[in-house]
Amino acid sequence: MHSIESRGSDLRAFDAFASELSDHCEARFEAGGRVAGRDIQRLGALAERLGRQVVSWGEALRELEVAAAQPLNAHRTARLLIETVFDEALIPEATRVLAAALALVCPAP
Image (cartoon, rainbow, N blue to C red):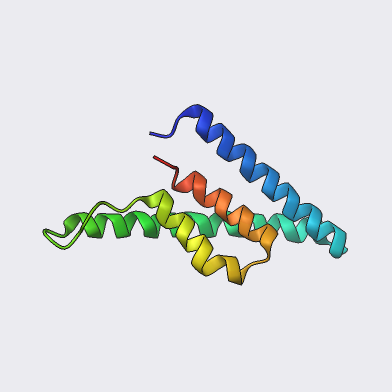
């Protein structure tokens, strides 16, 4: 169960990284704030989709009778997705927003 303190810390991290992305965009584009706001929403939606997928992978592993070595740790899986897939695909500021949003969806145990 995700504690209230831990959830609050994750929310503050998300807010800080979202602000960082917004500042980055405002410094580079005339409509940067509006663009960043839309991208932050899209990154949050992507995190939700990824979180649902990670949960479904865990459910699929639980159905295995002998092949699974251990339950899937959703938080660790989410971190690995960020590091192996999205870190190369996104600018660093966006990667941090996605990682923070995904931590909210797949909290540490």
